[in-house]
Structure formats: structure tokens, C-alpha cells
Length: 273
Image (cartoon, rainbow, N blue to C red; front, top):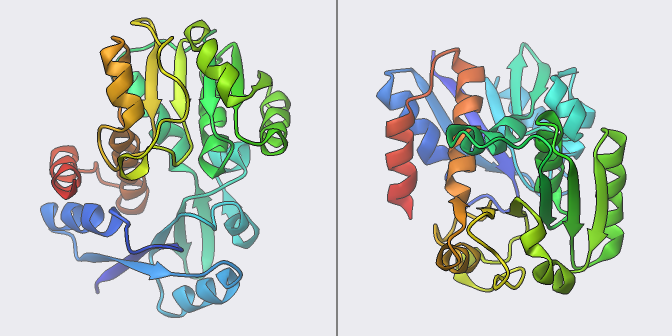
């Protein structure tokens, strides 16, 4: 019997997940299929019931449901509890178990480059949903401090509290000041949507140096303005597609118990750009 998987969120039509997972299923000859299923904000409960009715084997969760989905889980892994959000669900006869593959998916490209994050200072731009998983990831790696630069201080304060609760030093900077002192940080991570479709740069890059590691989680385009400008400054670059691929592979492995076919999935992903 064919197993069905899905991604839920809104909007959903831009998602690369169906192409990534269907390629992997095909490559390994698995009788599985993966669909995109739009669930608008406020309709999550009904959407989950519908998925249970069709006996969905598992699903990914994206914006705006990653935090709300926690309420509907019967069980969750440590990363979920740490980040307060879930993005990968397994359905076992109507019992839902949640995982968070964003945490390790974010760290994976850093580890692949053998970069040591311990005791580093991090500048995190943005205070949206992705920021929590990034803070949770850096806390696992025992960084020294995370400074949150955001348009509004209010949203940043929530994350600063969250970082402090899990044992990290954390403070706030406005975006202008962040650009001026960016050279004090080993990691500069963009977790905003600025740069999407190649428009705009979240902070000034002129003080980025060759000692900076610039990680932009925006993956369309591959080379965002932040990445282009940081490259000119000689910084080490980590691309958004690397995180996207790493977290998708981890979801795949949770569902199938098989190693995800990295090359096949990478070619599919990069082919989409």
C-alpha cells in the first residue's frame, strides 16, 4: 500500500518539499508519495483531522503552524521541546509524534565545514519562527552569546528571554547599530525574509571581514544580496539551501528509517533554482 506524506502550511505552493521527497522515494524505489496540503491559519485542528482520516503516514509543518502544532502532539522529541516548535510529524495509528529537524538541519552545514561554534558570539538578524530553532541549535553547541538584531525590539525581547531560559547570554541591537559592529561577531545569521527574490540586504555589510561566517537561511535566490556582498568582503558563506536540504533529509530518515539520497536530493533542489 502506498504511504502518503505531506507538507502543511499557508502559503504552500512555493514549497520545494514535494519535489525533494518524491525524488528521494523514486531514487530508493519506495512506494511512497508526498503532497502539498494548504491549511490556512486558524484551521489547523480541522486540517489535522482530515490528514488522520486519509491515514497520512507523516507530514512536515511550515509557516504559520510550527508552534501551534505542538498542542496537537501526543509525544515530542527534545529538539521540539527546546525550540517550542515542530516541523516533522509521524502518525502511528492516529498518535502524532513531533520532531524538530530545523535545529540539526541548521547546524549541519556548519559541522560539514568543521567550524567550531563553541564560545562564539553570534549576531542573529530577525526574530521570527526560524530564529527559535537557530537559538536552540546554537545552545546545543555552547556558543558564548547571541545578539538579536530586529526591526522591532518587542519581538526580539521574547527571543532574548527564550535564549536566557536555555542558558545563553543574549541582548538586543537595532539593525543600524548591528551593521556598525558586525565585525565583533564570528557568526552573522540572517533569519529574516529580507533578500528573498534578490531584494534588499538586512544590514550594512561594509564591516564584515574575512573572519566572519555569514549564514543566510533565505534560499531563493541562492546568492542573496547579503551573500553577494559578504563574499566580496572575503567572508565564509553558508547557503540557505544547505539548511533546507539537511532538514529535509532528516525528516526523510525519521519517516523511512533509511539514509536519504543526498546527491539526488541536492540535484533536484539546485535544479529548481
